[in-house]
Image 1 (cartoon, helix red, strand yellow):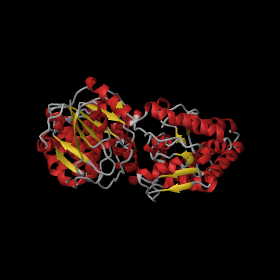
Image 2 (cartoon, helix red, strand yellow):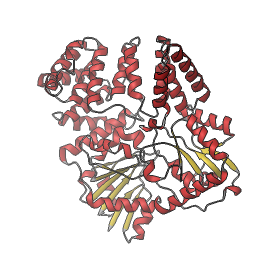
Image 3 (tube, rainbow, N blue to C red):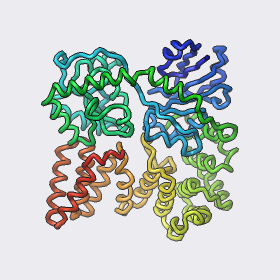
Length: 538
């Protein structure tokens, strides 16, 4: 068996099984995979492309290889906006995030398999020989305000030892010397730090996340928490019970060696390949590749490939996804006249594709042509009424913000709420989700609190949106100062952001206001919903 690995950690596994392995580590950029293989005189039976942190490596022509192919999405929680179409080029897709696996098959790509990250073999050091009671290693910067609050809470309440910028070896040494290891995740994902801390035999406190129960036994190998109050309470509990904490840490350490090493993951991938669902081919594959490039360009990468992406998408504009991608691309580069021309042609054809209807209406709105935008909505929405009679409300679309709300409704029907990890810029991008359409609507009509309320509701279940929600809820609270529900929701956001003092103050205010209004029972019910373990629907 001949295996080509484009990045990734599995070379030792395949070599040990007698495979001939070519391990490629190309620089960031787009690479012709057939040319790379030809340079090395290598014809693989299996090719596995593993996403890397820091470098963005894209393989051109992978769908044309005669061998089986697979892609492992490691940071799906921040890169799904381009990885979902890219995954369609491979026979099999794997993701580290169980709850995000459906994103890859939503647009016709192969169904993704869950393949979490892994730990390493480390000797267990008894807690009595560890010098750090509470420790955390992670990047602290202004761009990660929630992590900054997390670190401040650990420092002030637990005198935690904090470190950043460590090498992998130094980080493992740090956790080898740490008893309790609280973990923070940007978007509520299962991250590297969980496996790193548990591998060192630290007792890891990690955010409750989809798939965690499948990896470790909560309360027996790791400790899960829902918010900052929950984390602080559980840490105090185990700080007062060091023997119990060590028992859990030993069990987690043993669980890593028993089932969460690189070899275990490679074996799972190997076993899944015979059942690989297959890849897109021909025109569909070309469109998927171009859409991946558009997603990368929206994130500010690979702009020099705009002409290539435009050529592919323009040649396939009869496909709704390609037409939508073309509009997104033109919006990035300010091609207003091209947007008007294509939208007018689409409206004349009355294509009843909901996502294209949403994208086209927002595209022509961005081009500054409100009358044509109204026409696009009216004509593109007409075929949709047969699917969802009366729900598109096209007769009420008169103002720019109405176009956004129309599009938000279509995105909601398609289950597209937000694109985590992608910073939406309304000045250069066309919304592709409910949250983005509402952000644009809010920028057009900032005084409409119904838009603010809808945006907050869309973001509430999504971890990693707390900084945005803090501003939204502050506006709603100021606009409606007699409503105790806003300070209670601010308390929830504060608890998720580890701003515990501020959260406690907002909670006390909400409780007092609810009591004065005679709504104590409603307050208690809402408090239980916002702060109980049912909050795990991240």
